[in-house]
Image (cartoon, rainbow, N blue to C red):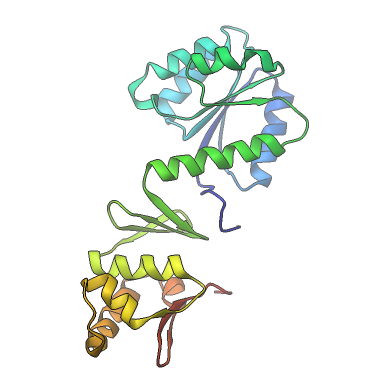
Length: 234
């Protein structure tokens, strides 16, 4: 997975009455790495499934057999748990874009046999959600900057202490460049005390012990300089 890609462990609800189209979209999304996919063939089913499953994103067709996508969008927006769920409206007609946005859709994608625009839009959706949720991502590691949670392959693995979290964040942010001990110590303690570098080593060892083994191996000491986070092959 490329560094700038969003997390793919996301639940996506596809709403369309065309079975062929749904299968095509599922194929595109699975090939892109999205695996948790739900499908509804009409508006009522979409609302019921969205209430129950609370998806991370909804791909909503404008034309449905029981109600149009605009009404579905409006209904979903009225449900508190789904009020901020991103909705990507799909239609063959660009002229419907303004009305769709007025009913609460966040994005608008024209139906096409080329998945490029849809996939690019989904990446934008999840990047925006991560920014809203104060998430920092580096490859297969994500950090929640608000509560110091660490995720590995989108699975929560540890909640770090403030100091160990700050160390890990700096190493990730600067990776693959090594970070000098003085910079690390100053960032964590708020003052420059290079003579206390041993304290930094102890704190770094504490960080390593708290991380999964696969992540421990990526933190390397750079002799006479500091530390570096390098992801090569685990």
